Length: 414
Image 1 (cartoon, rainbow, N blue to C red):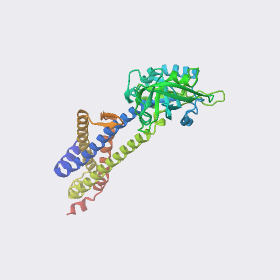
Image 2: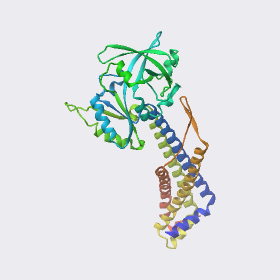
Image 3: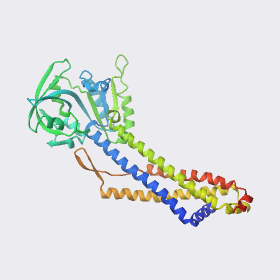
Image 4: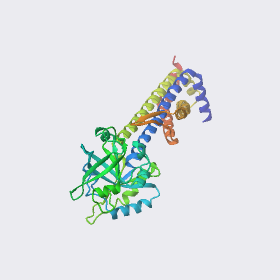
């Protein structure tokens, strides 16, 4: 085996220019893929973090049927006080859960005493909400951020603030229907202006959960949903499976599920963008496979064609077809390994340079968000393994052709 490696290395060294060009092509493919994976993965993780850490949380628990009718924000599908206590106990006992926050989602009429429009509100416990979605305060573009929200205060979306010329400290009126259908109104003070996470058309504000219960005349400690934050996002699927068992497996007297549990992926349209990024990454990998395959096959076919006499000679002196096959496959393997090693080295250097130089982009009103491209060892091994495997496969057909040559015909070749 050592002899085969030595001869294969010597053969590649004999054809320096061809070996160099092929290695450069493979290296460029590896660098392109690894850099794209690192940058796109960093971008996707940052966007997911912005969505989950400023609005959704990682997982949400609702009463069964709430999500399907969420557009109307039904109050008759709230989680009861007893159900919330059971959920709280389960979540507190789960070591993977960092924080959780009950919310009431309501639709109301918003009035500045001269004009009226509609608004959607998330009523939250400020302390619990800040632990569950720690970036929420960063969406406040005007007003105090400390403590998020107090009793009698409201955070209104930028769209409504501009459209109705409402400023910090202004008094406004919220009018909402309770479960029984009766109407109640209450005066609030504008504490801050909130940036819409999904764009300039957002109409979502924030208020204190106790104010919402008072406005809706809810006497018990019920809520529409419970948002959950995990300690480790990589544990999302595992924790989701645990919650599907308890409390997700609980049923009522009719045997129907009481709760429904969803990850952020089911709650946000951004998940489709994340999937597109993953699909683009797959296409880039396919292109890498094509580049390596064509490069190696071209080189090895030319190597066989140019060395027909040499193949005939070594076959005539007793070299077995298996060793000839191994020789050409090893040449392909060495080409793949050489290009992969150089490509990985250059990619890691490129990733380090991007982190030092500080690539940034803007997301909404948040300026200068820094990308931190990283790539995991498993991703490097997968890409490297694909390249080496394709290099071997690409050299296999020319190697088989060389191994099957008739020594007499090969020696006659001019």
